[in-house]
Length: 287
Image (cartoon, rainbow, N blue to C red):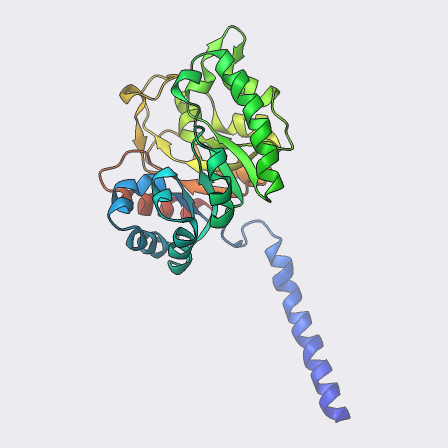
């Protein structure tokens, strides 16, 4: 018995000593690091999902994604049924988009779905182009942030480009930042729409700091002017690595800022599955 104990201890020490160089290597630049989970905003595959969501979820997993972010059209399924579909596909659902109109009516649904984040994806049309609309939204977001937190989740707002239209020295986005509680209201930064509005997503990440916890990854074709709307003239979507956004810089900044979730999205694509597959492969080549 004593001999066996001595040999076991000796082997343990030997194994531990052998492991030390590996541990040290893991802290060296260039040593492979564990992959950050990547997700898909299901709006990207909305036309396919309406025909058969379970099959689409399995295709998403097969590409390599581990997470999905839900949106309003899939809420035709009861929350527990939708969660069951996502679980069966081998995916998780940390976040969901819930419309401004009717948001409060989805609080219990989101809780049953089991998301960590309830995200308001945009303001109603009649609030998008007047500063008063943003003041109203800021007050509403503070209220929703408290209610969402009381249910064990967190609240965030997802940007487009209209929030960055200047009104003198102010923008609607700045009002949302200034007039909301940083402990209750966070932001999901859409890199495409930030770029489309004429801003740099890397600079915006550093400006927002810990208030941005999730990002949407979608690329923008080069050579088009910025805008503050979401009409056809603002639609320049393409797969990651095929556009004008410096993704190495974006991902580097996001990792430094401790971004929690990364969701690939492409608003328009003739073949959504092929698009998200291409974007996934590109992301895995740089992160």
